[in-house]
Image 1 (cartoon, rainbow, N blue to C red):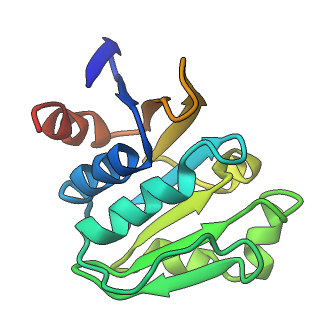
Image 2 (image 1 turned 180 degrees about the vertical axis):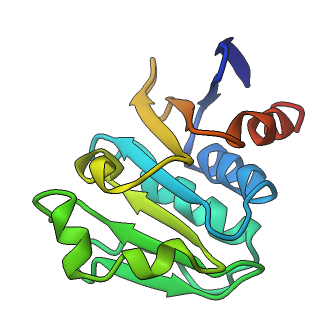
Image 3 (image 1 turned 135 degrees about the vertical axis):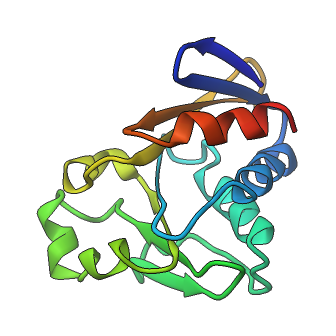
Length: 160
């Protein structure tokens, strides 16, 4: 991983397995109440990353994208709340499904298609953007901390 500007961190993964490992590494830094907004095109690696987060949190269940159920909850070292905002029209839809109840809890909220609902969330949160790289399976993963506290934790995975 490389820090390319103060507060930003990028990583390159060469396949889905490496993307999951990156998620697993970040999971070691997660705390109760954390929010991660995953951003990227269809097939860019959001779900693979969420699977790695789950593995790193000790989730034993198979993690899949909750596109049609909207929200899935998994038990681990910290509860993982996995939300897919693809079918939502905007931030106000999150109130209708009760997402605010998860924000003060003891779990971690991971939102795929987080750019669609970003306006709902107050800092601090971590935006994780997935971009296609030079090969079919290569991804550039950009971590952007919004608010206090994330920069220090990101340096922890830089060293991993």
